[in-house]
Length: 425
Image (cartoon, rainbow, N blue to C red):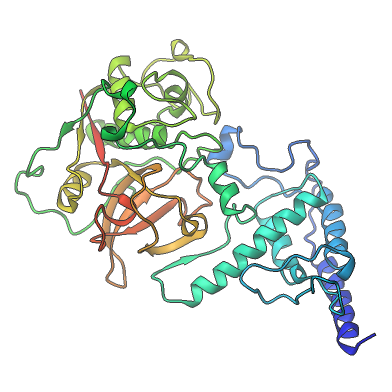
């Protein structure tokens, strides 16, 4: 055997030993991860919307991870899969010649640590191996991106085991925001539009240097839409919650599920527009609380008769902010949180972890979110602060900063293209 092959076999043995000794131990036996669902994350558990950290799935994962280690460290007998971007793992030649340590071996320890951190479990070794491949690609992308001075960072999060396409499908990106109103099919043509925002919205008062409605208590905890194209409903409830707090002084947590099930102007888990849902709330006389009508991440029969609308959630009208006008959007969000649409169909969104996202997306609107403020970073970069609906383990605790005064029409990620907010009765 060649000397290099002997060295690699020794490295494989050392890696196996190190990984075996590094497996976390737990005082209490966790639930069985082999639950027929293929993973520990339950998209339809409403509690998962706010918190993913389940009891650690140690016992079942130890068996799966041991099999995965054997699978990866088999060398030439294992599948030859090159790491994305080159990676720093040891390469396995396609013909299985000489180099016997699989390229993914380099990522095993980090992958196992990630698995325990996020409480993931696997239904099979094949599923675990697929997740490891995606984790490795993400790891390479993170190292490459953060080596540059891009103004924002990316990092592993609860979705590192997904490919970008799987991530898009999980959150129905591109499905849950339809095209702007002037490009809608004929059957939507008669649906109501919002009023145009009046000029000089703040009546000549100076615009604050920074606005943060989260700090002011007008924003509910970050939620998770799960595998349902319902981002529009989260954007809607977010601006409604903010308007209600500003007018009445208490923060009501409102029901996205009522909109998904009952709003006949929109399309449930298949997409919608915030203006249409403002109109539905107006016609309905308000909206129920999340407690009375909890989120399930799937469409169902309308059950609005089983709950009472939250007092003070009647919509009088809704305002469409002037398109491609930074000043108008700043004036709008200076008075209350604003529903907006952006393009999130870029891989930089999946792993975003902090900083001001710059020159990373276009204006192909495919995702509804909530604008909660603006400011200037420590590096002097002007930004918009946006609340997402992908859970608190995504992004900067569920938030993302987009560059303000971006050098492109429509603003960074199209943030200036489709903004609106409700005015309560």
